[in-house]
Image (cartoon, rainbow, N blue to C red; front, side):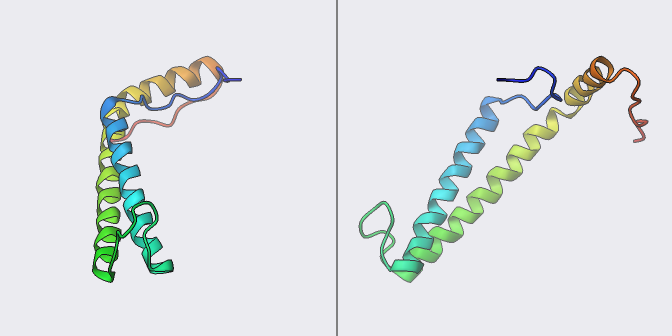
Length: 106
């Protein structure tokens, strides 16, 4: 059962979802390349990767896509920062009336 007494979380936007799908694609590329290193054959696609060069390129490309996607996801979550801070202040005031938030020093 979903607890209604939990801190606010970032909203899932279409951009975050798209970057998450790109992250999964990068993970699949890493899996494809890494399986060649283990068994000298592909995981999902017969004959791919077929050589060391293809396996390294697939693995490196997957790592690059994952780093890019995670950086974009963190950027999108960072854009929600002021909204999240306001929602968290409301959550603290509602559920922990005696607690004080730390001062905002920018």
